[in-house]
Image (tube, rainbow, N blue to C red; front, top):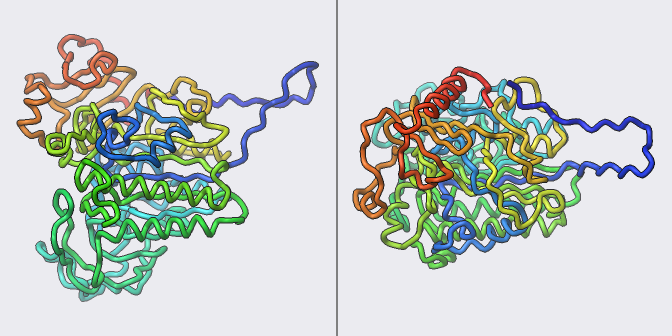
Length: 501
């Protein structure tokens, strides 16, 4: 069943006395997507009354736009959510896991990305930050490259770092790229467009420890003197510089800023230490909020804020450190939702989601409409006046009427997935977890007791009514076999390639 039945107003050329003049469509806006990494629903202060982290810039963005409280990433981990956002397709139709170090691209040449669509329709496009969708690193591999060592990873001598790297952002619609690909994966070096700027000539070396958690840094080549703490600052500097270069340029732009924070390694800069009462992670979130503010001020500085549609969201829920943060710091990164990153429970994929488009998207509104990052493709295409190419964005809804007018969301159903063969289905107020548990990230025993979380239940799945039990504590799987059957049928149809709505 197609979701692209659009109501089209047709001017017939015959004036009707007293009829109101048609409201003109706004011109195509600049589009900026700010994509945090591992930031939870409750890390946005305006969404968490007990927050221990100040987020004044994100709170301002929410006050100037619409905040969606039932918004979801496609997956509970990085790569799949990024793929779904940029393609408008459920990631699980193709893959489940993240791109590992030096893995090839998950995006095929034939797949149309949001950047490609916007570029075709006159947009200048840039990606600055964490790509994590793969590159064709084998194109740089030397014929006599040593085999990868399981302990130290790839050797710095395995690649000719002066060759262009195919398969990255420039191959998928972006005019410009700047970043370090993945903050905790090699190569630890800056990449501009399709070139490694500083060859990574030494193996990974780590000194000291992060402000919270572990380094989580995979072994492999590193540019000499690489400073993990300095990475976010360089990224924001480049972002502000890129925005400055758009002053007076003809036509709109699309800027995709996938932050590498507050993902591990958690290394807030010296200026940010102590900004929060939630430890090193809280300081890293506060630093990210400051970077959002710098981007908003840069848009103000070139006079385009009112012509720019800004979306802020995150790729999945918070990392496992969030459990101890509750006990040690009194801060709930997932808010009141159950679960964390990787989990099928709401905390794994219910994420911050704020939209600002002055004069089009209402300010100061809080919406409970069901929305997904998968829907950004069709929605932003509609905002840009860009027709969707055939067979592109198969799972994406145009939510512009929801954003602009507060109309009911056309999305009633959403599939949640992180791990292969483990799925959940949201349909209206119901969540069916088609597995004995929605937990993948281990839950400490002290937290289970403190939160009075239910234990094993002996049933093949779980069913929750979010309208009555938003915390997903009461498994009513045995009480509603008819709902289980209906949702199972919908999930099976979707997994088989259908478009059940």
